[in-house]
Length: 265
Image (tube, rainbow, N blue to C red):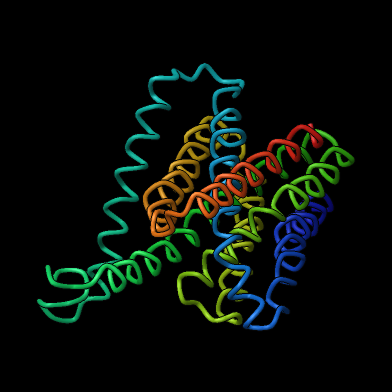
């Protein structure tokens, strides 16, 4: 029971510490935030791509179990298709009549983008919850190996999640969430870390073989959001200087994740 208390305590730290740190972004004035958000969206794209391609998928492939890479590839494909369908359902949910912003062929691109942004916000919460759930499993696995390893793992996860949580705040604000609502949903999704940790404590032996697939599903959600929802919005700015800035910020987000992973490993 003492071990369970350690796991719960440090899974809370791992889940909430990064949210609290990233939430300092919300202290900016509305004017400063409006100036910063377009640039931070590009940075968030980099963190999403980096977390998926440099973190989640490699960890799934490095699993100790004999996992067929083709099965993981199929899981990734099904995950992408699943989130496409989920986004459709979220978009349709915003329609209350036949001629709505989504279905009306004469709708302006601006209104369509607003609905896409709302869907992206909903998806990022789901994807982040899955990611945090997996983090909880990892924390429990580390604690069940060695208490000191569990503490280091929890703190490492908190440090790794800071840029990702910052990206989540940016995406939620970009999706039309208020500052309080963005903070509320980020805290709520962070509690999935505790849920994953507690379930893993009791069912770890039965759940370990599913971990690679859970990692890939989380990766598919982040890839879909970055590629399908966020990157198209960058094409509205076509000046060479703006494009160069976008590429630089995407690269910066990816490099930040890469450095974080390298440092913590």
